[in-house]
Image 1: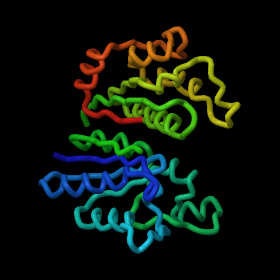
Image 2 (image 1 turned 90 degrees about the horizontal axis):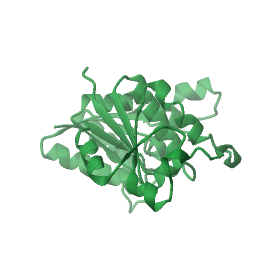
Image 3 (image 1 turned 90 degrees about the vertical axis):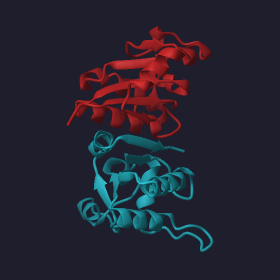
Image 4 (image 1 turned 60 degrees about the vertical axis):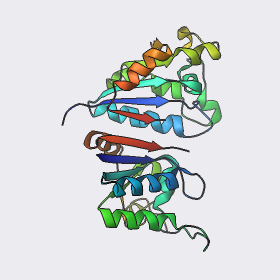
Length: 130
Length: 120
């Protein structure tokens, strides 16, 4: 079965990203596929390249990146949700004349259409909300 | 690509967090994608439908006004959980849109017909 995941929760603030990670790992271990993880609402904070977790805590962003690279999963963040929360890549930083950018390069910026597309191309789409 | 039946299950109040506003954005996009979109308002989510609300006073966009645009985006299957209305002493005449009121068994049937349920 092909899954798409939607994450609404921010790392280190809500349980949602950790549960989504565990679900993805377990699904893959059981032979299922995960095509896309779409980060929406406060979930866009999962895409920050600047998070510095304490040494005794998990590096949630690194876990997303490793999972995506190992299994060819697309990590997509909603552009509208991310811009207003200050999650921006180099292109947006230049376009909006901002002094810095913080989007991890493993994440792609996408429109909400990619959320609906995720529902269309997967057998099941699961939402991980706070 | 075949049309998919997508239901948005809206359970959060209109203000206090960004959930209502951003899920509404997703619902509108789903309508644009010409999917078979329906929306079920349940729990505190039914407060989003109240015609008498003034989000502007909170510095927020008015959710009811935005919900009024749903039919223009071909999102016309709007459902409300009957139990949520009874608990909150609300009547369909309080709402900004025409809705179909569903008892629990009808909600179960509706959910079972969907390809995807998006929580919001």
